[in-house]
Length: 394
Image 1: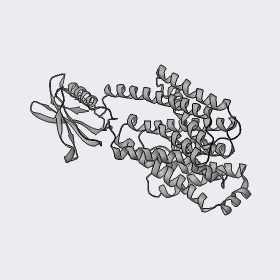
Image 2 (image 1 turned 45 degrees about the vertical axis):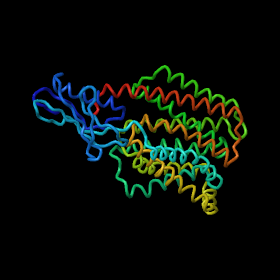
Image 3 (image 1 turned 90 degrees about the vertical axis):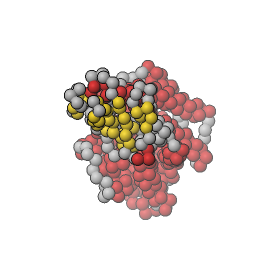
Image 4 (image 1 turned 180 degrees about the vertical axis):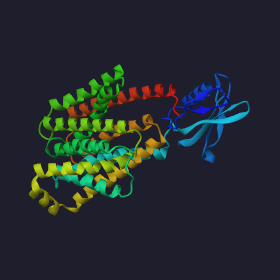
């Protein structure tokens, strides 16, 4: 609670401002200033800690807001009353436009995640699925926990996330990809986690859903129904069901992250992997047996070693590291649409490298699912922008 010249008080938590347009920033500062001055005219200035980015311009409403920058910077908001300056709060403002450099980084991440489905297929040629998943999460945990501090959340949440992502998402997806679904379709169907996340958010956090989002859900599930109707051969309904359960587990993991608050997702992945490894190892022993495990490890080629290492280093450390780097500099509404390129990359590389057939029904299913995801993302973005302007985030 900050007192300013006895004109009033302002509740100013030191949170990050979650992005948006400069007009919204000006509106936010105007609301803050009005709250502490009783509606009397005051001058508001936004100062940035980086000297070379401290150029300011006067907005139509009289506030001074920064302009002409592309990366977020720490800032402090000040007001002047009776000739005296008082700091009302501090935080960050994020850019609404990505630089070419960061667009290339976003493309690299989606390419890594998309092509990773092809690499998984190569790994499954020599390693049974649960052993493969065990090694993946073991190599995520062991190097990273030596350098990263434990996230400031409870162990039960960390353990729950590890089980949901380690066994529920990757364990089941690897198992399905062994014989029951192609890499391209797996990269597409797993994106249904977006809609499962919406369902869980409705029941757990009482979040509202727009009618257009229900339309988006119907569009995407029409694509799933088309896949199920054409199941057979390389893709079975059992494999499709497993990947849908994997997507559901991913969505439940998202709810754990939402409950946990703001945490480093890389550290979260590292420590949660400790809990994924024992369950995956137990499933490997139960379903695959010690003889198959030992034989697979002894006969594994260097290609399998590289694939497992890439799962840990490329897909997790580099992929998630770059993705969260971008989320730190831009609002989620700017970054997340790039995720739509993941199944596009996955299906394209599976077609080009593995010669995965692309009949008309598969292309139609991809178009339906991606269209539904795009409609939902667009609706979500509009909701975020409208919601930001009405909240006093500092």
